[in-house]
Length: 96
Image (cartoon, rainbow, N blue to C red; front, side):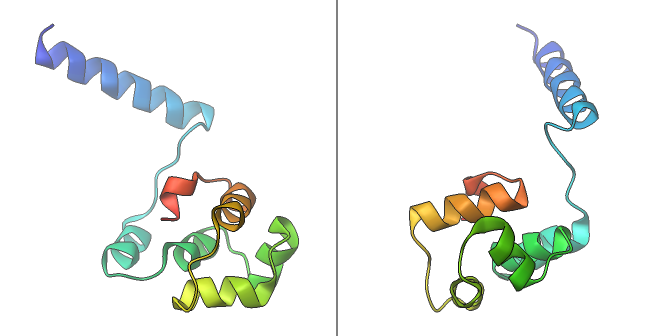
């Protein structure tokens, strides 16, 4: 298949995903923070406008544990990261 057609189809799928809310754009400011090495959990929490306590309430994860993950003291188990991702409405991949 022609690369141009493949690219156009990928563009169309991405556009539909944005329009239906299945995907979202992350502003450059936040992307830059992640690229600069800031913890993705902290960045996504800011994107969602949540405090650590609000995220703790939404996810069922202890606020101290969230603080430890954000500061790099602990990584968090797979189950914990999954709960946090679900509460932030993102994928686990976006947190790791």
